[in-house]
Length: 387
Ligand code: NAD
Ligand code: MG
Figure 1: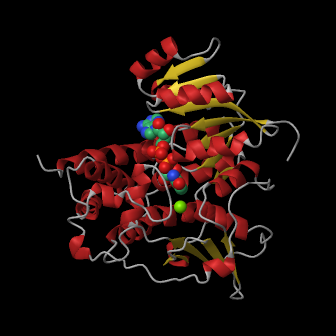
Figure 2: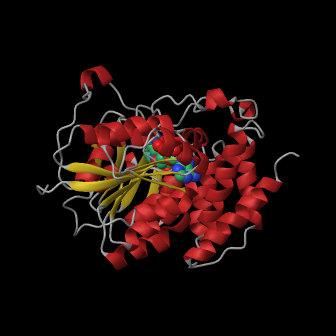
């Protein structure tokens, strides 16, 4: 890495990925400076982060909370913005060269677009951006010559496996999945599973939305679409395998049948740090794999009938155009509904399927057409909720 520190904006610094990113940065003070932090509404945690990392600007989505933060917490000279425009404003700042997008859902799309247009590199955890507008975003990245580096552990694994293989196109990508908390739960029980059961992920501690996505396997479906756009392979050559130990984070197969895999303990700090220092590596404290203790790793095929969301994601990718944006919008609304105890766990795929049935697909959409597809599908999916 060069000697000059990089100035970073962390969008969603109070979330699971955001907090892990700050943990990583805490140990690399000579390489990075934090310029921007943002939160939806968690101003207490934001205040602690401001005290420790001294950013120049913060964004608080909620306007009232922003006002309260200005009054009670803001040190002199700190710029405090609010609203969605705040998020697109801060990524343009001249003192930012790398944006970590750790927002959840659709909210991540516009800030990513704005960052790329202003020639910032983006380390992206917010997979929904690539699901919604992968074609548009990857073209924009090429146009502006910036780096878009995945934080998602599977995509980080693939990126690492592809190093040094510029002349060897991958034959197959194999995404691993832990399988979530309902791997052994019979489908008949899916109507009765509680929010608490669904939030109890066996391997990863994450935000609520992605934890539910992991329980339905929609998370893996979104990751198939994300991999398609990041690495350019068709859906038929992107496979999913269940690997409950979450030690292999994904694999690449080459034309001679040779495979490369990336392994590590399930700790998001590893792919986060790699995205920040890429292609260099830096020391990172944490556990190490003990193979004799691990003893075995197991693999099996996902049940796409039981985990219908995975199949729906493959179907949306095959249809193309705005279909993945509609899939994502319906999923976001259904997951919110499940978390609010308005609908059952088993209704999530049913709502998405209905939304995809009525969605009128636009091929090669503009950004605005993609956003319209999102908004229309959200509105439709809400009509499916019980009154
Ligand atoms: P989280 O819910 O823990 O954090 C989300 C952050 O975004 C918070 O800081 C929150 O204040 C902010 N936020 C939420 N909604 C917002 C909105 N509408 N506008 C502005 N800010 C908003 O989520 P997370 O688990 O950190 O996940 C973030 C992203 O990273 C998701 O796209 C997820 O799929 C992806 N991801 C997460 C993990 C993980 O281990 N948590 C792993 C891989 C990928
Ligand atoms: Mg992942």
